[in-house]
Length: 376
Image (cartoon, rainbow, N blue to C red):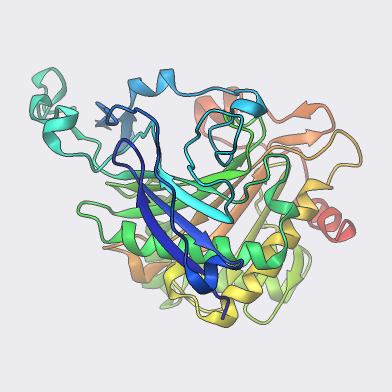
């Protein structure tokens, strides 16, 4: 098992920060976290979630996020370590391996009700029962994969990817235990075309007070499949992809990487465990070790997918089983996708996709898999 030491501290405004160290001397002797010397006000937010009666989905209204940090120059990056000659950042230490901290501009928060003004949130918008609303209680965390501003997740050594996985498992366990949390979603946005506002290699973790629409659809499909066949839907999908082999990118002892048969995006791949595990916390040591290798390898393949134009923008989202109802219906899996369809060209979600929700793919899934195998 990889030796990773966790150290918890607090930032100047009371937010929690966690160091996950895999290098010496911190692993052996522990880390003494330096204080956050900034003069910061406590985080304020007024987010609410409103129910869309036409879709059955909850929409988070987080107007305060309009003022969040947007693409600062590298010497003002808030995710770099605090070093002599520059202003203090979100991470007080002069160096770090992996760091997780509460987002300064959260869409969801566990802040006290009095602090976020929840007492002033009526149960219905405009007093109309068609539109229920409530405070957006949850949690949003930032995960810094490395202190190197100019690196990327795909460039990390396997040992560091393993540390990130340990951090994801740790945070999934704690966030799942928070009151009101129904789903924990781990993800990375990379590239300004995706909408990234900070270029430092990082991801995020959202602890939602509801089951997200994507997971809700999957649970319904899995429940129907279970009732009809008595089997696990994702397990059957995995078995079918492995048997076909046409879209398999890599197959190992505990995980398989493949392009789904109905891939929507110009570049897309899933990583699915062979064992029906609900989330990161349930992975054993062998599964975590193998995943570190497979995931880092997949990210590298995606980064060199196009022969020109540089690494494509992508979203990598880990769909973990919900905390409560439906947890036994699905297993965790990765969905990684890019909206770049060719060098210099993006897949725009126009009328059919955005307006009608009817997807039109520009690339055959078998061709995506072939290319991912070629660049390995």
